[in-house]
Length: 173
Ligand code: B12
Image 1 (tube, helix red, strand yellow):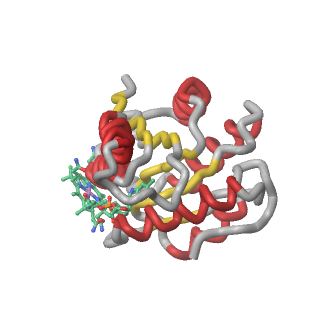
Image 2 (cartoon, rainbow, N blue to C red; image 1 turned 45 degrees about the vertical axis):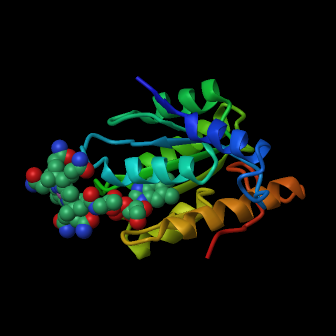
């Protein structure tokens, strides 16, 4: 079952209206954080879901052990701008391409895909070739991930390609 964590985004908007916070330099994104695979390593996904929500984005966390088909369906149902995949099981080379292909097959070409977890650097190029725009390993500061999302939203606003089906070659870092 999907667990929506959206309250902080509304709170941030409320505080902005009250003039308590400076105007942010990014456009809020609607992001699905997903855990593909059969393992139970969910700490990173939960940390990231919370950090992105606290950063002002709307976040939906899928929960553990979702199939590629379930993840594509959740992205579609939630009308998400971006999909973040957390993978520590070692199965990323099977699961990530299956998800990327599923998104393209469903016509979700504008969805931005990024990933994190235990992904050896030798596997990064093949995932980037699949359309994954950013990959974050253990120890990544959440501020870097928020910076990446800010750049991503600026690219979307200016009409530059960042989606899974848009072959611009752009990647973070
Ligand atoms: C904690 C842990 C566990 C806990 C998990 C608790 C939980 N609820 O998550 C427990 C004890 C249950 C566990 C079990 C196992 N584990 Co374990 N575990 C770890 C450990 C030590 C730390 C993972 C962690 O929580 N880190 C803290 C979080 C915050 O960091 P993180 O997930 O990396 O996330 C950061 C970044 O990667 C990134 N990120 C992550 N996801 C995402 C997603 C997005 C969208 C973005 C933007 C960024 C992002 O941002 C985060 C912040 O910097 C790692 C080793 C390691 N150093 O990573 C092994 C590790 C992942 N485990 C491993 C293994 C093998 C297992 C077991 C199979 C062991 C066994 N034989 O029983 C079992 C599997 C059990 C199961 N059913 O899944 C291996 C995986 C090997 C591989 N992939 O090739 C590792 C790498 C250990 C190792 N070196 O061998 N494990």
